[in-house]
Amino acid sequence: MKTVITTLVALALSGCASLGPQTPSPSILVDLDPASADRTVIIESITASKGGLLYVADRVSGNVMRIDPMKPQPVVVGRIAARQVNGQNTAANPSGMVFNAQGDLLIGASAFGEVVRLRAAELDPARPGVAQTFATGAPGANGVEIDRQGRLYISGGASGNIFRVGPNGGAAETVATVERFTRTLPDGRTQQAIVANGLAIDKAGVVHVADTARGAVWRIALDSDGRAQRPVLWVQNSTLEGADGLAFDARGHLWVAANELNALVRISPTGEVTEVARNGAAGPLEFPAALVFVGDAGYVANFDTPRRVNLDAGSTTTAREGIGASIARVTR
Image (spheres, rainbow, N blue to C red):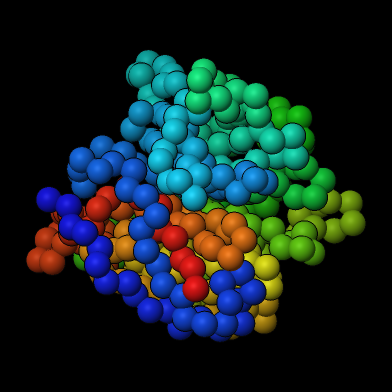
């Protein structure tokens, strides 16, 4: 049975222009599946339009939903249809999401090894569009991010590959690779091998990659011709266990959704690591997988996988103490 979040977790946060120098608190903006906590809705990523509207994609139904933070009622505006993959009907497993300059929504479809696109005009609650292929040749497509030139970067999960495709899509090329690594979780049996997860690009054009397996963030610089340099390990820290989604705030601090710890972590431009929010299985952070900043607020997608800190007390298989798939808001 779902529990109601009545206690907000205080954060130790300083120097972040997006959220201010005071101690903000996370709370639930919207429960995406009010009837259940059994993962009948699963979201792994979140993004926002230029107008500040939030978008998430449900792995179960394939629906793409829009949420107005001022009136947080989810509305279906598009969908990603299942396909035949190796003779089986397969859901896309939508992951990273980003808008391009034209207002089209690009979504990583890991099960297809692609990025799919919903054009701006197709994001319509009256007649939801169906996503079509935008980029191919990206096995394990996970995080997505766009640089100033409109090029799309795609992370490849356990392969460590970082792919790139031009503004018009097409066949992606591998531009860099993070060295593979597999970590055994504290339960002694669960394996974590995803070394290229969330992506974020700073103002200088440096690509940042979340390494979930190592609990780390890598940097990939580009030369004047756009060639990617060898990935450099920037930060590795115990507070980054389960590093997943990445997002920069207005002061250039990189925020990390540390899913295994039900935590949010901030990294300063000089590499100083600060854990700014953490809670147990009751939330409001429930295996946080991604985040996005809109004005003075941050919004977090709760993936709610029953692992590590996000397990019910005394359980090794369930995570029902919280409310399940949801969006958490962090404000002053």
